[in-house]
Length: 225
Image (cartoon, rainbow, N blue to C red; front, side, top):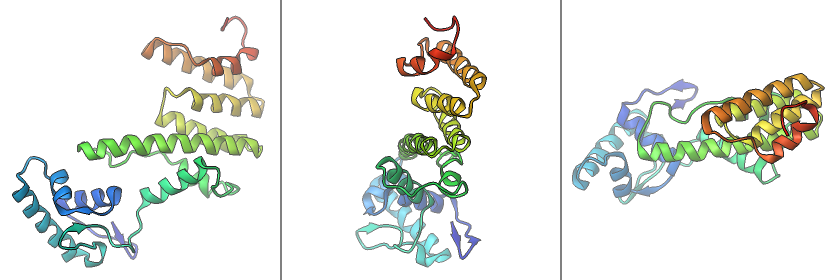
């Protein structure tokens, strides 16, 4: 958490509370307590929540907006993952901003990172998977848009980021191949396809999708029947 550019240090319980609220927004106190302290009884979990609320507000009183019945982040708090999710959703719905600035939309989406790395709470694992899939789909959409704007290098960067997040997603690898072909780098397209196909066969025992095979087939000799 940052306030006026400075990092605000919080205890682990405070970090978990703010992370939960950043991902789930407003919820009843009982629900928040049971999710954050599942090993405790409801009474003890609520007590832990009250203590944590007090500690967080003593460090940054403006960050929370609790009532007697529920708790949430204050409306003035901005959450990076929510901003990323909104941008991703705009791209997926075809109403996002034109990524004409390589340091704008592309720079935001092409920075791979795991949600709350090292955290293994059930609620974190579920959100991590949801955010990862949304991120990958948005990167694919961005890559397609960049290819349509004749920007294969930027499209390639976005597509490669998608494959890093989801190594066995055919649609993402297809965009990588198309980007290489658009640049005229047929050898790189073939090399990428061969490497992906080898990994896919080794790890999952399956071939790439028919769409990807059809895309690369004209450029191969004796590889795909």
